[in-house]
Length: 60
Image (cartoon, rainbow, N blue to C red; front, side, top):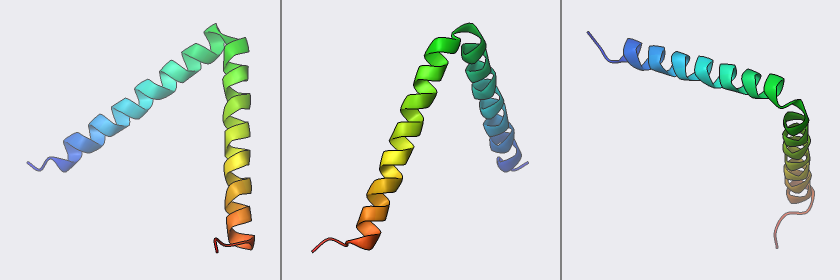
């Protein structure tokens, strides 16, 4: 038997476990979850802005 199905099952289980932990944290600590979400949104917005600047004005 190949290892591919086992690794796929392990990956799926890990993703499920991560989703459950994130959901638990969001329900248990809603204020901190909102704070973290705002922080991640700001980080993604800054990153996209940086990529946009790089595309419109390439490095010299």
